[in-house]
Image (cartoon, rainbow, N blue to C red; front, top):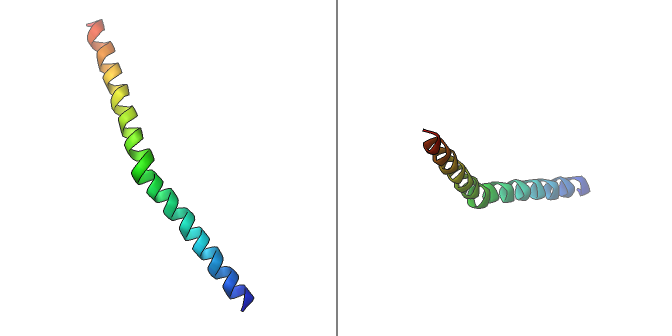
Length: 52
């Protein structure tokens, strides 16, 4: 019985970690990364416009 409880706790901890990682990517890192990419594109486009 002990091993079954241990496996259950391990499964819950694993699911919790993956859930937190998923939500962090969707709600925090994803929008921030897109914002940084957009700023980088604007800087690149501004630099190419000056050269022409």
